[in-house]
Length: 447
Image (cartoon, rainbow, N blue to C red; front, side, top):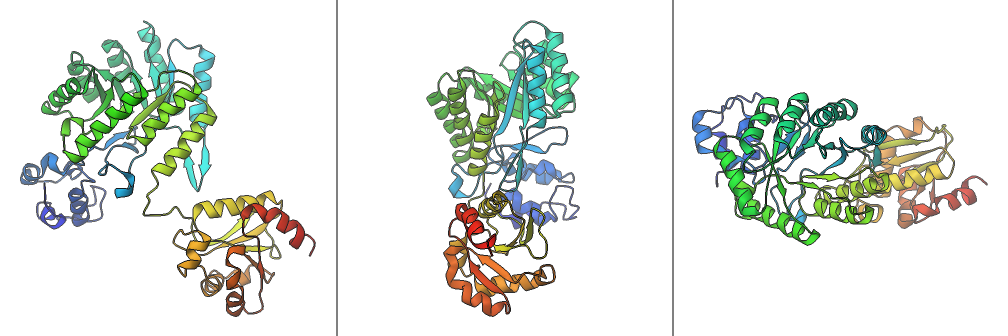
């Protein structure tokens, strides 16, 4: 398109109504210029704006919203490699159930999806979706399972069947959940597109090869339907890796709209290790939704951890709020430790303090999400900054102790900290958090 944010703003209504999700029309125009928003988000866009901007304002990979509240988002990506800027929307992880599964297994799987929660570096991670697959001929049982999956887990579904009539019935049964219908072929695309439109779902399309897939998506786009997900037909890990990469490169580098959609992959059960490798490929190479064949907590935890690492903004460290944290149930005379607000550092240190079996205060000043040594080298973690922070948060009014324990790696700031905290004793702790337990036993419990 080549238009700047200011040029785009001239085509917008300039009402600053905030209905698009941005605070001002200029902010929305900047998102359009960066291809991080779509013109359709503006309810008052003029016909001229639609004509001039149109599809050119969409991100190269369309953002697809799922769930009744549309909070689960896929696509919307603008870079091919994470280090260029950042990846935006994480690969959604789903766990599959079949209508032919034993009822006990179905109930167990849906319960696990609903209840599974993992806390990591301050983020709460859950299974994003439920896959529901029809393997047999019981269309009624398939539809009932779709309703049960939604009622139990309250997560958007990936509804898969080779029977278009069963898919349409299931789409109606869970209308308004903004789920995915999988998968439309060239000959069934018209029927399933109509069902997706009527019942508020997204349509996954598939074909034997990319050329045939492009034909299907192009036809649907020309008919005015654009809520699409691509399901590639591949038969090996290397082929899936290659196809994912080709489609993403075509969308981002060549602005090839027919492939500019998130993707959907069903992991075929081959054993836990093989299944995990295939899922890792999807998370690492642009997968939109990855449907796992079964629920395994160790597998889910590993995949979520990997996904969190890949989709963390490399330009913005994960950090916790600067303040004095209560570890356990500290009293005024409980020990006072200090560390930086880099999330990983905070959670490691706080965890090790808990493992010591004591209650304590953990002072976490603003360090812009840097680790201890990095923050010290940048002048963000010094005796002056820590002392100032302790006074600003009124810690001296909350504790009676006048001893503060600093990380061993920055022992050189102890003198400066004592100057900035008169009447306080600065104790140099261990360099590694793993040594806190022995430090506490040797220095604190005996004092």
